[in-house]
Each structure stands twice: as C-alpha cells, then as structure tokens.
Length: 459
Image 1 (spheres, helix red, strand yellow):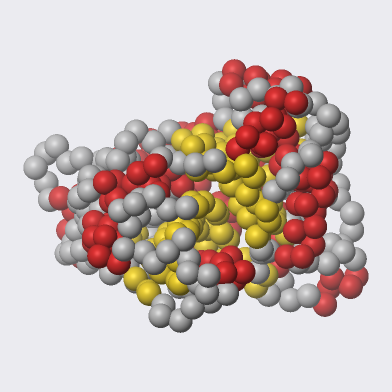
Image 2 (cartoon, rainbow, N blue to C red; image 1 turned 60 degrees about the vertical axis):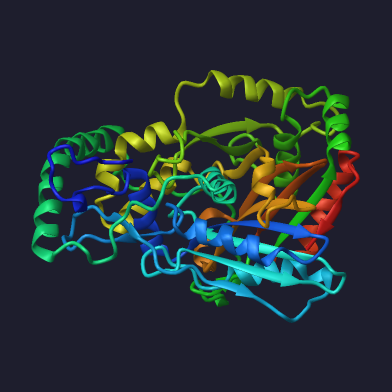
C-alpha cells in the first residue's frame, strides 16, 4: 500500500506497511518462522557472468531490495526502508548434479532477515555434468511469489520501478515518533471498528477443545522448541502427459493440480475431521503492477475437495472450482476486516486469532498455489533462456511446537516453463514419526502412479 504524502511533508511519512504485511511481520516476530520463496534456473552450460552481474545490479536497485523498519512507538506502524547489500555467492567448486536440491536447500537456509538484512540472496553453483544453477531466495515478508517473479523479470528486461525508499534510520527520532503518533490517531476509527467486529463474532472467546486423537505419551520426550527441517521434493512432468491426464479424467482447465494435491494430502492424513474432505488454501494474486508496494498482494480462498475417486474423475474438483469462482468472500476478506486490530494486538493473541480463522484444528489446510506459465523473460537470467526454471516455497526455522499447532504441513507450488510442469512439494507429518525425504518421495511416487503420470522426482 503506497501511502503518498500529498501535503508536502517529508518523504519519511510514506511507505507504511499494509495491514496484512504488518500482521505477517508481527507473526514472524513471535514465531521466528521464515517463509521464503526460491527461484531456480538450471543451464546446461556455464552462465554468462557479465550478463548475470547486470541483472543482479538492476535487481538490487529495485523494490525487491527493501527492509522493514519497526516504529519507535509501541503501537506505531512499521515502514519500508532501503535494503542492505544482497549477498551474491559464486562457488568455484563443482558438485554432483544429483545434489542440486540439497544445494538449493542450503541456499534457502542461509541467513535471511527482513528487518536487519539481507532480505534476499543470490548464488551460482556449477555441477560435474557441466550444468550451472542460479538461485535467488527472498523473504515472503518482502514480496509474495508473483511480486518477486515480476520484479526479477523486470530486472532481466531492464525495466521496473527504482527503489524509492529512504535508508534505515533516516528519520529523526522526534519527527518519526510524531509521524507515527499521528498515524495511530488516524487509524483509531478502523482499529475500534475491527475490535467491535472481533467481539461481535466471538473470536475472543476461549477455543473449544480439539476433537483429535490424544498425543502419544512418547511425544512428551520431544522438545517443542526443536527445529524441524521440512522435507521437500521437486516433480517434473511433461506438459503433454499432464494435459492428457487432465483430459482423460474429465478435468477442466487447471483442475488436475488440486486433484493431485488433494490425493497427496489424503495420503499424508490431512483430512478434515468433520467430513474427511481436503481443505485446499488457494491464493489469488491481486497485485496491481510493479508500483504496488504490498508484500502480500493476495487473497486466500478455501476449496473443499473429497479425495475419493479423484484418480478416476476430476468432476468433484470441477464443481469445487466453480464454487470458488463464484465465491464473493475469501478467507482474506474476513481477515482484512479485522487487521487494524489484530496487527496491533499482543503477538500471541494475534497468532491465536489467525489460527482460529484458518481453523488448523479441524480444516488442516493445504496450500495449493498455481503460478501458471512462467514468462520467457524470467528465464533469461543470464541473457539467454535456461533449460529448466522452477519456483518453490521454503519454510525454515520451523519448531516442532509450530508443526503440532498446525498438525503437520503441506505446501505445493506448481509452475510451467517450456514443455514441463513442475511441482515443488514441501511436507511433514509428525506421527508416527516425522516424515523423511525418502518417505515423501515414496508418497509422491505412489500418488503419481495412481494418476497414471510418468515423472522425474528430485529430492
């Protein structure tokens, strides 16, 4: 949300975080969990270092390179400031090609911090078969997936909006406090209205006991603060095989993905307690262009799909998508009306309200994101198209307690480039034991077999 100063006041009064971005930032502060996005380019050769360097220089001059500056006041709203230098690592040592995803995971687990910086990283890695990979990792608190892809494509094409932000600490303390105090007063009507809606809806009432199996006594030995590394795999399917499967099962446009994800979720035990259906959390981009300052310019809609029989017919998904298209309200609509209050609440209270809204106790939501066909311009990170391009979501610094709260985790990000459909899958269930990479690969392989799909699985 670009809050332009039309009164001639200092530029420091601009660039406050939108309410949804502020809420995401507050939840990050209480959980420490980093939700990242990663874009990977794979070339069959060495990359053009000079052209890649030009892309990097353009990228750090755009809005992608920004940080969050908290307010000095307890209830003041944070704002965007110019970012620090983005690390650009280029390894001279080759790795086995089979370790591509392990290397990508290492890049995703390198320090990324949207407050102290850096908020993103870039790296190049050669492999023993002559191929080269390029990775860009960024925090979701800075940009969502569609926003990041557009900014990277703008850097490749030499276009985009120059970084408009002031350096960190550029505001004098007194003027900053006065500006933030006036903003608190200006936001007061929205905040009061949101508090009234929370009270009216009963969100502040104690949460009812969950109707879920009791936690085994053996689980008591686990330290809830233990960090769990979430296993992930990448599935590559030829577009023609994907389309043929979709048509064979009577699916409409883009219905095979939610059908596949629902089936995989069922294998992982993420079925709704009330009726056994799968709750797919489907994001829709609402970004208005490169000048849109929002980090999370998205809406979330819940699509409910019964997993039975999807390998024989996608008609249940067709019906669910039709309901989704006609939906006037989204999960984000409800959340947006409460944001002016939630974003200013104590962080633990805000976390509880958000969890109740998305109902982790019963719905067990599964994130299912389809980025569609990736633009060819995005693929030219070194000036010429790469052989393979994929994007994925990565969660790091996830505690066992956090996974207990959400009863596991499943996120699928799909995209298309050239003649390949890519599914980047990150998942973990805690019982009977934490899911391993090999177990996830097996579950994905079994689901692909059920749909009659031939694919390559990298892990």
